[in-house]
Length: 101
Image 1 (spheres, one colour):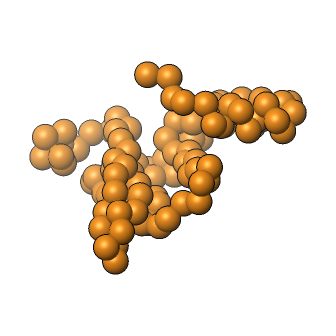
Image 2: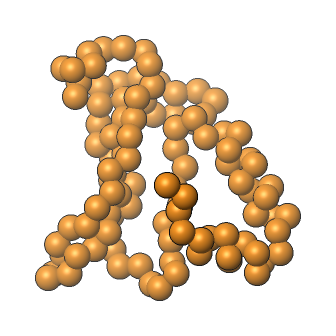
C-alpha cells in the first residue's frame, strides 16, 4: 500500500473487520490500517501501519464494540450529546437497529 500511495501528507486509513480461528472458534477481530496517528486536532504522518484495535475475543449477546478514530471530533461530540439526551429505552433500541445500507 505504501508503494501505491507513496509518501504523502493526506490522511488515509481504513478499517478491516473479520473473524479469525482461535481454539477452534471463529472470533471477531478489527484492524485499523493508517498512515497517521494522533487526535482529531493534531496528527502526525508516517508510513502505513496495521493496528489491531480489537483483538480476537468473544462478545456476549447484544454486546458491541465501538471505535472512534480519524477525523471524528464533531461526530463524537454529537453522538455523545444525542445519547445523553435520549431516555435509556430509546438508546437501546437505536443500538439494536439493523444498519442502514
